[in-house]
Image 1 (tube, rainbow, N blue to C red):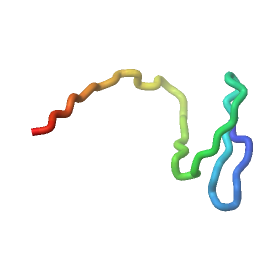
Image 2: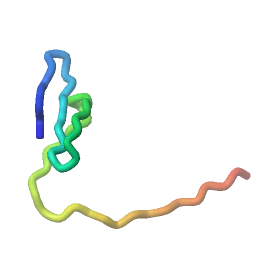
Image 3: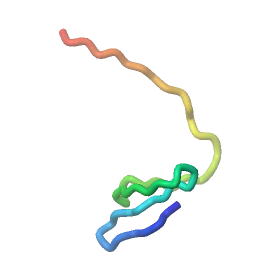
Length: 49
């Protein structure tokens, strides 16, 4: 839940399930329009040649 938006673009969010707040930049927020959230993960191993 959006708790506060500052004039310089920071957004304070509240996690109601965990009762905590955190700040992010407005550029990092994305609109969620519903539907399934992809849960597939890919693992890559990097080697140094």
